[in-house]
Structure formats: C-alpha cells, structure tokens
Length: 209
Length: 99
Image (tube, rainbow over all chains, first blue to last red):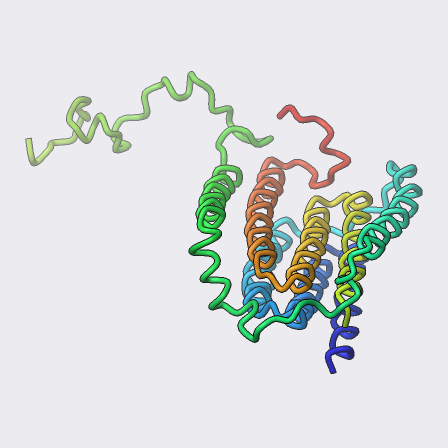
C-alpha cells in the first residue's frame, strides 16, 4: 500500500514540477505547483511528518499559492514569449541539468551511508506529530522560532513598502519634487496649519474661536 | 520504501527547478521554480529526519517554509512594483539596476 502511494505521489510531484517549467501560461504554472505541493504533502505523510504535511497543505498550497494567483491575475498572466536572446542558455541548460541530476544522485545515493537503503530508524507513533514539533519548537529551537517570526514581520513590512503606490515616479505622473512640497497648499483644504489656527482661512468663521 | 527513493525524487525535483530558473524569463515563473528547489530541499530534510529518527530535520524544514514565504512576499512585492511603474515584467528587459 505504501509502495503504491509512494509511486503515485512521487510521479505526481515530478509531473507537477515539469508542468511548472513546461507550461507557458503562468496561471497554469501556479496550478501545477499546487498539485506538486499536495503530492509532496503525501510524501511527507509517508515519512511520518504529519504536522509538516498539514502545514504544507494549509500554508503553502493554500495561503502562499493564493498570493501567487492574485499577483498573476493583477499582472495579467501574459504568455511567455519565445525568446531568442537566450540561445546559448537554452542549449546549455539541459546539459547542465543532466549533469546536476547525475551529480546529486551520486552524492545522495553513493554516499555509503548504510541507513540510506533502509526504511529508516525505528520511531514511535508520536514521531512528527504536532505534539513533538511544538515541544521542540518551544524548548530546543526557541531561538530559530523567534527569529523566524521576526523575519516574517520584516518581510511583511518590506512588501508593503515595495508595493505601495509612489506618486510622481510613473511615466505619466506629475513630478513630485521639492518645489511642489514647499509650495503652500491651496486655502481651505484642511491642512494642519488651518486646523490649529496658525493660518487663518478667508471667509471661514470658526465657531470655537 | 527505502529512504534512497525519496532522495532520488528530491534530486530530480531540484534539478527541474534549477532548469526552470535558468531558462524562464517571466519573474513570476522564476519564483515558482525557486519554490520547486526549496521544496526538494524540504523533502530531503524530512527524508533524512526519518532516516535518523530525529525530528530536528522537520523543524529545519518548517523554518525553510517560513523563509520561502518571506521570499515570495518580497519577490511578488517587487514584481507588483515593477508592473506599477510600467516596466515590462521580463528579466531580459530588466538589465539596468538604476531606476
């Protein structure tokens, strides 16, 4: 049963990975990656990483991929044009990838580790459960846990800063230079100076003064 | 199934991802291929964690997932900023670092 499941999931994962590279429309590429991630979650389950499999499906295939779908929809998933500028790279890449596969397989499988060909160490049924992961995260790996939360905060702030609308930098925008900032805004537009009474507005009779 | 099979799948997915990063021109697809390589690394980490019967590798994989989420956030923010400024979203056209 587990052998059948392993082959189904690994073939699904590899087909999904090939789909990400081969499909021309980025939207289909994102959907292919979702299929790939779900197959990987099945492989994680087979390796007794239950919590990681759940996190993979919920966070990765759920939240992160929704972000991708939103951005592809916003940009307008234009089909990839057949570029000719990459002539050398297009010839060299398959050779490089082939060499890389051979090298990785030699490094991983020819390492001489006797445990590689085994089914792994004897583990209890608690291995990889949310219980064990949570215990490790709050004791042995407390510092990486806190650093990861800080990294997420920095990334969120950075993304807001990167993607916010800047005035005056687009092709058709009015330049937003120092002179524009220095010039006083028109009267009656509700500036702070008017609100505090430092700059009286003609024709406005303040009730509270 | 032996651990070696999982490592072979991981190596294949990693190589496919690297090939995609090298050949693709759309930055969104390049980010997708980067996700492939990170996930291949995750699979290898989880396989080794199972091999030693030690859950430390699973924590490592979880941290890799956090880093991947951050990378996606910043990368997609960059792509949205590129699109807002009317630049062509194509890594071959974006050969100048100056704005």
